[in-house]
Image 1: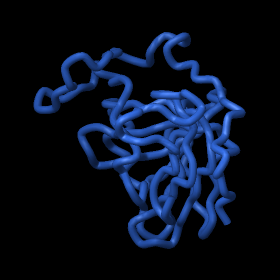
Image 2: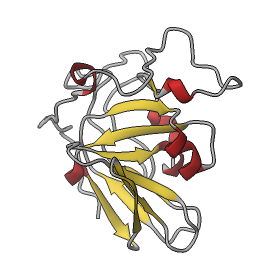
Image 3: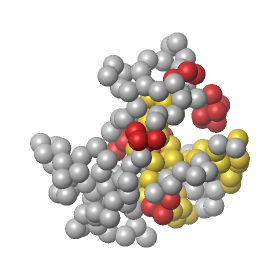
Image 4: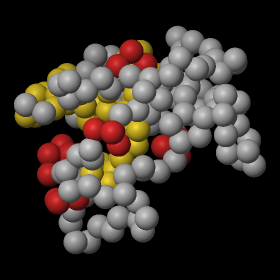
Length: 178
């Protein structure tokens, strides 16, 4: 595993990790940051959920027609350089952004045992692998298409769909991010 990316321990032919996990798998050694480079973060581990959000607040905060994100346990993400500013955009979300360039990196929701990380801030966005669902499609713009077969939800999905347990499974070759 290099500086950027996922140390997944799987080969393309296998499509599975050494522990047998597939879609909700352990993330390791993922790094990212803001546009100007002042803020840097590392994600050491954690199962995740992926989605494309079409809500008006995410669109306004990002300036994009949708926001691709993934979630990790709160302890899995840490800022390794710089300190983000925080903005409570509503009673549903607090957004962390770079005080210098304004890049929106992370969202926290009260009561959600996860941190929502914006895919566009990853050093290697290809590790995202694609969304598991499209959410807040009630705000979907007519020029933006949801891939065929991707589950769509007008708002948030039912709790049983969003519940992704945190795993204690780590790869044998896992290394701490300094």
